[in-house]
Image (cartoon, rainbow, N blue to C red):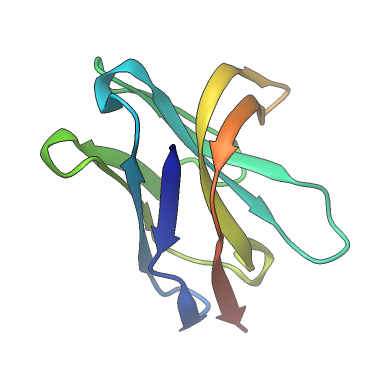
Length: 126
């Protein structure tokens, strides 16, 4: 049974930082790409970042490049998303997912999602 548990969201002022965590179970961690996507009210789902195990290659949407960093700890089956210089437009529910296809096109990170869990809410005050 594949499970992905996201955590670490909260309320932060614009310019602040948060670190999200995603613990995966029920999968062989090294065999999967893990991605983060976000969903804000009245907006389309947006791919944020992806890390491909085991080589650790990463992809980012242009909207977060240079501010967000994705990493993984294989020993803990955990993927992190360090979010710095947060902006009000970053506010959303953030989800982690196992990812099949992924490509950056016109600055957007497009991903195919296979499994995902509950999101974690990020609120950014201006």
